[in-house]
Length: 162
Length: 238
Image (tube, rainbow over the protein chains, first blue to last red):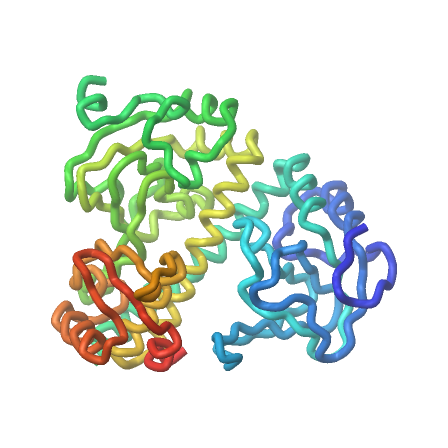
């Protein structure tokens, strides 16, 4: 079984809902959960770093994970905290890219790691799961569009020629 | 078919001589055949509106040849370009999947060959072909990243230099390293760049001139070189 960088806790047995797969049948969800390896991360321990080849996806079971983007000089540019249920590394996996951010445990956390090849095989075998990802990404894109519209409505005239 | 041939195109995805790296070109033969059976191909002149903001989602439009711009209009009537779409990309994907009205308008910026797939057919196609769903997920994922970058640029970056530097650095991620620095092709007009980052055409021209003067960029035709990305990042308010 492929490994992340954390301390092995056991095969994934909990039923934490992975938000990107909301709406899947319990059987399909169980199939996905069974692929995972549950790992424990100490405070500050890195799950993956910017530029590392994508080895798989990480699914936060408990605790908090700090996700940040830094520039070439190591300056932190953007950051957010991922919580229980969030799946990290999906874009890198889908687009066959290196990780575009660094993920570090913020306090102790438990994270389920699923290797890239297992996720690919799972998605090929479960069209409903793949479609669920499409729906969730579409939902996120809709929110981003709403934000863009709001910014355009409220701020564009002020921003123009700033 | 005569018109397609005169444009150097084929009417068939499998044998298309202009197959690109686009999301809907790189499908297996079987999946491409399924897509073929449900698509309608049309040729559009420059400036044709494929769909308008708030229209009910009729289906997706896949660009086979040419480019189209995706834009939304503010309540004050100002246009914000979300992105320029090229061959192999689908337009209207979000609306078709979510069932919500189109969030933006799509207009061709040059003569285009476009394949149209009706909404019901497309959703069935995605459900039956995980490979196509994965490609759609890739495209949505990239669109989401671009949209987030635009939200950040419009909402958090306030200076013209910061916005233009950020825009150029984003374009540079797809550039090629050369001895003169990172090289990228920029086919957008200054007005179109302004509509993407919330600046007037004049401000884009003035700021680009300033960047050239400071040797942050050099321009040769439609090729733009960034000799030192770190120097440009300094201006980008990242």
